[in-house]
Image (tube, rainbow, N blue to C red; front, side, top):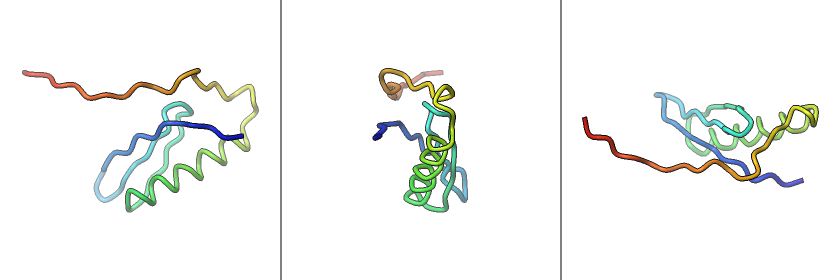
Length: 71
């Protein structure tokens, strides 16, 4: 089965931290590419090992945008 999920990557020196918000799975890497690859592997392992009743995916992926706030 093929899942289309979101990944949020943040820089936390010296690492990149990658999170899949739909599954609350997180991984990290020294490069952006490594963080994404590690997250992909972590999500795959989660989906392979989780009981199907534990997997609650939203019908649509989260909407991510930016906003500006003046203070």
